[in-house]
Length: 119
Image (cartoon, rainbow, N blue to C red):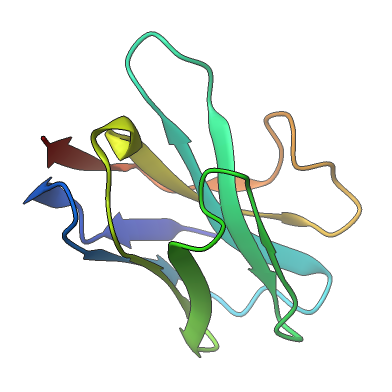
């Protein structure tokens, strides 16, 4: 299983970005796919994920501003609105078993895409 993340870039505060995660194979209904991020000098943080049944979960930093959806059975999209400088980080897409906790290094990871938000 390979995950390919794209869509990062440099934006100003208040603007939007759309991240895409392309999954090489349909990995089945027992997985969730989502996004984590890591800012310089900080630990990796859960952002959001979605199951194949469409159930979504958001981290506190994403609630009310980010929306995660499935574009098709192999692509998960993270729409990020009203971006803030503290959203600056490398964003990684991840697929893991539903039984795996959101904390920890589980499942399959994409290569990361950099999001930079200037003030």
